[in-house]
Image (cartoon, one colour):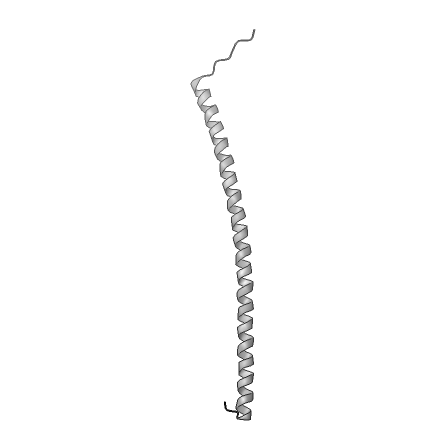
Length: 81
């Protein structure tokens, strides 16, 4: 019959600490992955917003240009409403 090996308090403490640290590291890794995924989603949203704003700026520039052309034509023809 094999005898049981006695564990010293120091060995028990080191083992328990190692287990707690590995659980903590796993939890932190999950949190970091969640943060990374969230940041990727936010970057996508920001890029979409930039594209939308650029379209809006282009549309405003086009409307200003067309308004200027219309005002020039009306001024040249001296039309009054």
